[in-house]
Image (cartoon, helix red, strand yellow):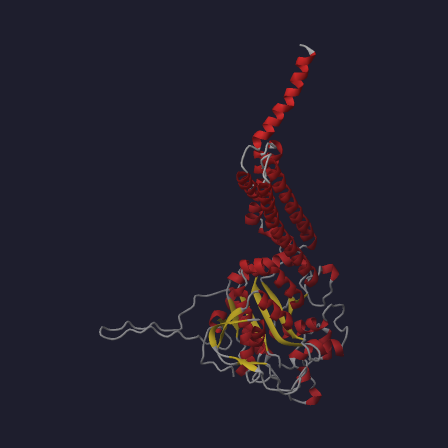
Length: 527
C-alpha cells in the first residue's frame, strides 16, 4: 500500500466518527427540547440517545435502583425511616445526599441537552433550548432546596427540643434500657402535658393546663385525665424529698382551711424551684419534675415523661397547620382576669367572645382562647375545651399538611415544646403517636361534684380509685350494653320522624369518648 493510500485511510476514519456523532444530532430543535424533558424525567435516557451509551446505561441503572430502594424502604422499613427522622447525625447525612443528588440530576439534564441538540441551530432555537434547560434546572433546584431545608428544619427541631439521655438531666424520668422497644415492659405510658403561661406581663410561669395522657402501648387507646389548676394539698410520693417538706400535701396548714392561691397546683411549677432550689437533685426543669411527682401521687400513676407547651408557641403551631375545627357550645371569653391568684394582672373584663356554633374554624389566636378562656366559666368546662383542642389538633394534622407546612410547624415547635423525652426513644414515640391518631381517645371524669367541689381539699383517694377502674376497663374491655332503648316502629298512619341526635353525657367516674364530649350541644352553659 502506498503512502498516499495510507494517509487517505487515516483521514477517512475521523470523518466516519464525526458522521456517527452527527447522526445522534440529526433532529430539529423542538424535538431536542422534548428529548431533553424526557431525560429530566428519566435520568440517563438522554445520554443513551445522545450516543453516550455506557454512561447513560449507568445513570439509568442508578436512577431506577434508587427509586426501587426508596420504594422498598418506604413501604417495608418504617422503623428505619423513623430512626433516621429523629437522628441529628443521620439527618445531616441525608441533607448532603439530597443536595448531591440534585446537583447530579441538573448535570445529567445539561449534558443530555448538549448531546441531543442539533449541530447547527439558529440563534432563536439556541436561546429557546437554553431557556428550557434553565427552567428544567430551576424545577429541579427548587424542590431539592426545599427538601434540604425541610430535613435541616427537622434536625434543628430534634436537636433543640429533644436531648440525648447523656446530655440531659431529669429527677423523675425512667432510665432507657431498651431503646429499640422501650415499651416491652410498659403496658401503659403515662405522659404529663403542661400548658405553661409565660406571656408578657405575667409574673413567673403558671401551668394553667395540666393533663395526664395514659396511653395503651399495644393499641394506642388513650385516656385523658385533667387536673384542676386550683387544687390544693397536692401530695408527693413518700420517697420524694418534697414529701418530707409537705407531709400533708402542698399547702400551709398554719393559714387554716382556706383558699391559698400561692399553693394551687398551677403555682407549683414556679414556686417550688424558687422556695426549694435543688431539692430534687440534678434536673433541667425542676418545676416540671415537681408537678410530675405531685400528679403521680394524686392520681396513682407512674408518670414517665412530660411535654411542656408554651402557649405562645401553641398559637403559632395552630396557624402553621391552617387552624383547627371545633364545636363551640357557649360563649367563650377572650381575655379577662379575676384579679386573684398568682400571676394576675388585676381585674378586667374580657375584650371579646368566641360565639357559639358548630364546626367553627379557629386560627391560632382564637384557638388559644378557646382552650384558655375561663372568665365567668367553670374550671371543668375549661378542661373539657382543652381536651377538645388537643383532639382537634390531632385530627387536623395529616401527611399533606406536614409536607406543605413542615418548616413552619418545626419553627413553631422549637418555641412550643420542652420535654424530658430522650432522643434515644423518639422513633418508638413516633410509632406510638401513629397508633394514638387512629385509636380511641377518651376522657376520665373524676367527679367534681363529689371529689373536688372546691380546690381546698380534693379527695385524691377517690380519684385514684376511679382512674384504676377506668383504665382496667380499657385494658380488659367487656361487651357494652346499649344505654338507649330502641324506638318502636311507627304504626301505619302515623308520621315517622328521625330522632334528633343528642350529645351523650358522661357518667361521673366513667370514660367518655372525645368525639361525644366535643360534639355540638348548645344546651351547655360552661358553668
